[in-house]
Length: 284
Ligand code: PMP
Image (cartoon, rainbow, N blue to C red):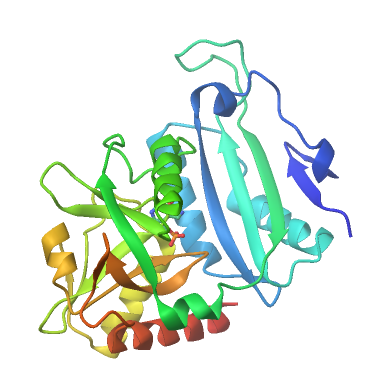
């Protein structure tokens, strides 16, 4: 089955799908995106993604984008046309195509792209063994809460992690506190078994996985605090883990070459991973 993409109102073969060279997403990163997991042919936590999408569009004042109802139809059509059972749907909405000028063009229409990709669920070995991460300075802008396609610091950070044999890089703010990974949210479990993740301020993206996991933590009655933590606190933590749509909940067993606790996935991280995976199955 050949891949099909949705581009600005039309379904096209993936290899021919293209946007205009003056699309503002291409020239200015003037656009937003979402990545939604597909499990058993269904979208996971679709509503949370749509709420975040509207927020991102609003913050960038991108007006006139496709409404939720037609967007949901496109998602389902992309899943169907690509025969996706396990995988992801990628959505990108840019301000549109117009002669290059920094200010908003007077008459411009947002351009929507939706692609789908088959992909196996996250490798269970990563969940069993845990992953290594490094820490790097956070060099991003002050509105990381907006899911914009401007991801160059994240790209450089992820590449640095890979070159150092790590799965992810946790970014560190000027006060020495961890903000988040380059494409994941960061969590620790303290010595007294408190699950901690940074509050959803402007320094992080409020992950949909993060939101779903907080619900689970509250429902299950685990101790929980939304606050920033330092690199030193993370290295001395009882457990650490990361979350994202494509990674689920992954235990972190090493930070900057230093093992976390005894260097194997923590029991609370494993419990939360199991509970989150059950939620994914339910949601789909
Ligand atoms: N932070 C950043 C910077 C990200 O890019 C992502 C993934 N989009 C996340 C966190 C995790 O978000 P989600 O759980 O919605 O995938």
